[in-house]
Each structure stands twice: as C-alpha cells, then as structure tokens.
Amino acid sequence: METRKLLTLCESERRKDLYPNVLVPQPRRGFFGIGIEGPKTPENIGIVWRSARIMKADFMFVIGKRYKGVKTDTTKSWRHIPLFEFDTFGHFHAALPKGASLVGIELDVRSVPLTTYQHPQRAVYLLGAEDFGLSKEALEACDEIVQIPGELPLNVAAAGTIVLYDRLLKNGAFSRQYE
Image (cartoon, rainbow, N blue to C red; front, side, top):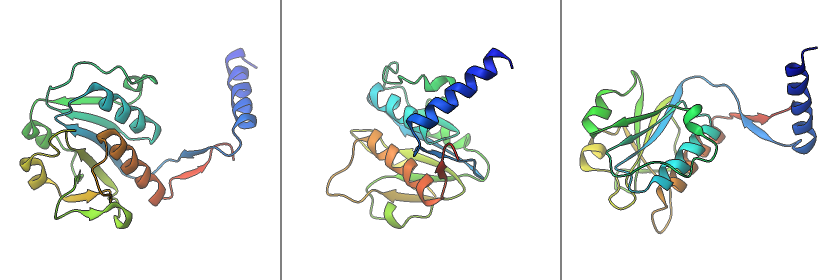
C-alpha cells in the first residue's frame, strides 16, 4: 500500500478514536453563500469565513471596502471557499446566482424569527455592517428577511454563524463522521 494512502487511513482511524461522536455536514442539494454588506472589521470577516468553511458554504462575499485584510482566518479558509468582493450593492445584486433567494439577516419589522424560518434550497445570506445594519437598498432587494430573536442585536460574526448552523440543523445535514 502506498505510504500516502496508509497515512490517510491511519489519520482517519486516529480521529475516529479521538472523536467518536463528531458530527459533520453531509452532501446536500442546492447551494448557499454568506456575506457582509459594508463590513467594518476584518475580524468579523475572518470569523464568518471560517464558519462558512466549517458549515460547508459554497462561497462568501463582502460588499464595500471598509476593511483591510483578514487576520482571524486561522484555518486558511481562502484555500477552500472563494471570497467575492463587490464595490457596491448594485454590483453584488447583479451577480447573484440564478435561482438564489437573497435572505437578509436583520432586525426589521418585516423579518421572521429564525426559530420558525424554513431555509430555501438555494440561498445567499446577507448580513449588515456592525454599526449600520443592512442598507435600505439591500433590505428592499431581499426576498426574505430573518431575525435572530433577542433583546439586542448580535455581533455580525455570531449572527452569521448561528444562521449557517440553523440551516444545516433544519435540513438534517449532520451525521456521524465515521459511520
């Protein structure tokens, strides 16, 4: 047996022994991506990017150029999930994938609670800036608006991670890694 294959098998067995109850996202139909309009801090971009990788998102995006660099992406997500950068919301909106629903994550009078929300098969999740939320233009363009119930708004990276996890959980996308 080739050394590389043997090492891969050994590594797989070691992980199975160390983490017997690990749940991982499984293959699914459709696609989804997540991004931030007007992100203020690179830390939030890095955290959302890492979460997107872990939750098996297909892509990530940012709209606007308020940040410089990403230092919190310790898993080097850029190697696994493409990051698209758009100068304006109009440029982003024109590039939406065919058949995708634009889902805004925002505290808004039209929003539905995440607890009862049914995620579309093809979704693009849009988070607002840390200090301004989603722009009026973005809110008007959203097919659906979802909120995470709570007294106060969450940090943008925390909100993004919760939405991605909720999508996988409700779609029954988790199973034991080593079954």
